Image (cartoon, rainbow, N blue to C red):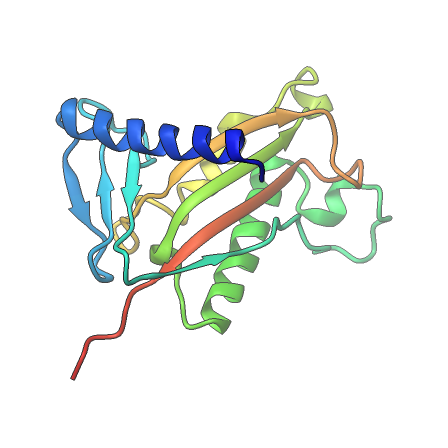
Length: 181
């Protein structure tokens, strides 16, 4: 990353944090150390406006995940092989992320940032199926069992490597510092 990009990124992060404080975003702890999650005032949309990470926490970057083949009787270019629609593919990906996090002694509650890449669904008029994504997402985030919300971005993109994939998700998780004994 070159200096102008790094400066822009740092400036944006500082401005977002300041904006969250100025606008009165309520902060909640995640239950894992001192991670603070700022809610958007007056909104029930299930994402954090911002997430603040303590300096002694460790950041874990997970590579983007695409849907796994769940129906091996289908061809590799058939969306049904990967959970079918956007909702099914989202659920399959999030289950995979949940397992990967578990193997690293982390959980979905440790996720602080999510980027979602959605491809147009032919069944939805060649537009991304954001509602389908949200139906899958809200099974894992903002629930009674797992109330922690990540900061999140979602984009419609032209394509993924396989034309049968409608979703790719990458996340950043935080491992809280171990208490000093």
